[in-house]
Length: 390
Image (tube, rainbow, N blue to C red):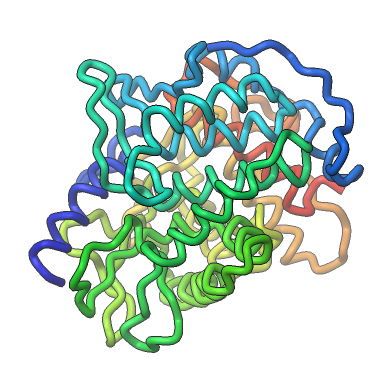
């Protein structure tokens, strides 16, 4: 890995992941819209998009400013591409067009200021300064949300923007795997010139469903190949009982990324969630995540679930925030459904903090930090869209 790439990787990581070298807690309103079908949107997709999203109004009140800026309070009230991308996706899933349009307007004005179609990853409210390096997951979720708004909700025409972002994701954020040049790895940021043979990867950036749907919609086959190869990479590391926040892919295979936490931390929690959301509850990484969770769950304080598990399978942090509990409940349901093999609809686990009550029926325990509060809603959408709710 070149010195330049290493420096950029560290800069991107410091911003993209809210975990550091030592695990630490990652810790506006809009007018309701008539959710009637709009010409051009498929009826089944409009129905899904218009379904209520419990907790959305509370999330908006806590994190969305009236101008469309999503605020991460634990990061100094900055706004970042991840938050704007998640906000767009959640607004679309909640059927809230006013919020969706506001988030996209702010994003275009403040983050989409690079020469390409990707976003700068962090905006500082005190100075208005934009960090121009990118974060691939933010761009992926923004493009996916815009595409969903067109296809599912009939909210205008974002086709050109979606195509441009997909083009630049494929051109700037896919790097040949050192082991097989025809297989693309997903870089965590727009790559600099002169990439070496050691590729930094954040496994939690692989949202297979988003990559495949964008690739299909825009004719960018490389994005589909990246999703397929990403699931292969995740299966490879799961076979080693390893599910880290960050890793490096070399010609010898995946290895620990020097200077980064090598265990399952706050980033890696999203790996099994995204796989489940993508209809891959049968993926080995989902089963591994559930095994790791089960091994350390006993003995935790009432209502807590693990949030950081070391590379040796040791518990390093836990939380009782509803977002983490809901994420694990969805992952556990997917894992149990796969294990049973009887085709019966999976039933989410009871809430760890409210025994006997299904986790998806429990309210969010806001105020909570941006990250667990956002995972809370993402887990609800994953349950609804990942083939688990019927």
